[in-house]
Length: 148
Length: 132
Image 1 (tube, rainbow over the protein chains, first blue to last red):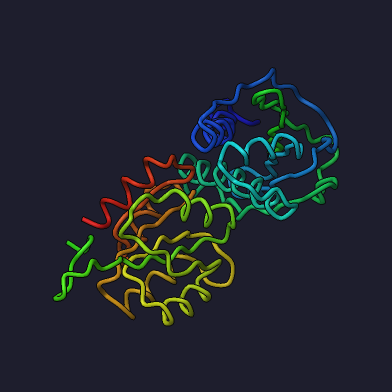
Image 2 (cartoon, rainbow over the protein chains, first blue to last red):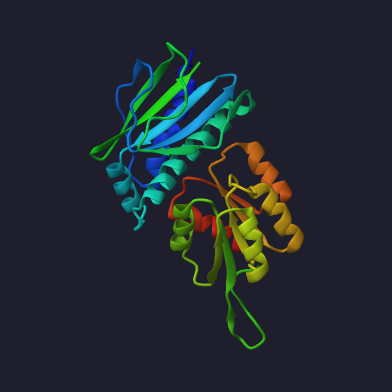
């Protein structure tokens, strides 16, 4: 069972990115649980976890949100590659936070990025995911934590 | 002091900076945000192998170095750069926030460590420290 402090590490890694990189904090919506493959937005950063826990953490965001985030970062390239780059950087930050907090009990992968597709990571039947809405300005992304 | 210096003829010398990061956004961000007139960005690289090639061509005084990169990571690259030029100043800029990683980077020859994400102010403070 996922512990609250473990979930907090992933959430803080995400919100910290918005607060520091865009100088505007994100807020957290009400988390919920779901079974099966969760729906994702246009761009998704994926972190695989093994060791003490097994599973996957996704940060998934719509293109519109990433565009505004890039603008806040003074970026003027809004290409597909830059969008991929950005969700990869957010996932990288989440991964870095997790390595710091969890230590060697967790083996955390270098993030990969998916665009416009369902995550190609199989989920065990009956496995549940925590979905945490990440709200920033008028946009909403999701942090999906799917660990056993 | 390796900051702005004057040579024998009194001409101000630029410090040459190489930016190494596999993220385009990060490379542009560092280049755009650094506010030191005496710093000249002489190249950018997306991995350790590219960094070594550009290092040979441009002979930078300072390097900002990501750690998690394809082909050759930052830790290995730091070791190679320090072998090539022991006086090079290296600022690690990484999302890897654990102490063990920072210690390893320093042991290999890095001179400073800045966690991602960072503000412009944090970046410039870290660069200033590297230059002092």
